[in-house]
Image (cartoon, rainbow, N blue to C red; front, side, top):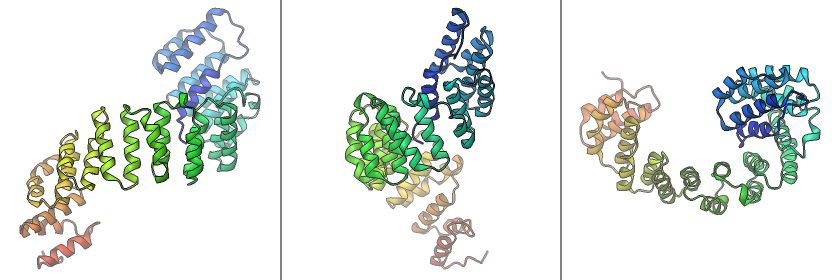
Length: 368
């Protein structure tokens, strides 16, 4: 599902209120203050405030469940919301909270049952149809999910969330024309960086979506992750030069995309630019492994072999790395080391390649 669980939790949180709470104003203010802390992500402070607050059992349990849900403890959230619902069984928004927790805990059937009684919220609280659609997906009812999201898109024309769900659902079903249509229908005011990234991720393998993705990315040209997602789309379309330029721009904007840029420059045959971006890869082992790959692809075997001591020190010892080194030593006529490396590959993923290399050197794979 393309919209994160956190997004849905936030939608529910803004809709929630201590149903039937007749406590004095100070208690209501405490509840609202803790809700605001949750919205801002200050979970530890919210917990401390909750521990110190004077609230009804129903309000306390609701907030405790909300904190547990934000912490990723769906089981604890389910327990808290179930206990809260026992005190206020007609609270529809609380049923949405419970269904959300049950869905995150992998209990789709229970979540479906908990939705009963929330129908009155379907056209006023966007979380209701979003949750209904997600539960339908979890129950393998794709048509039902589509209907729920489509209805939400009609009922909440200014919201991006239902359309993002539809983009993801259609893309997962390889209905890319429909996915493009839904993506294009997202209101411009709702198309923020998060929404743009989600659309780009969903449609990055659909070549026909590239013009649309370019238009979306153009609105957020200074967001490194949006630019990188567009780069992935061009890479999937077998356009490494364009992808490399975009990944390099994403890196220049502050994103961690030097490795991807170097890889695409390598695929585009631009060795010098590939090496320049590779030099900016932070992790030493990853940088050295990629550098050897770039140089090997450019047939600069002496430089590959020269990297071997540094690679060994950095712990670069995958079968692929050893295969490259074996071939590089062979190309330089260094048969002793080439044979040693080739024999280390026997019985593994590159067994056939190793045997062919040993044969080319006139050496038996079975001999010591």
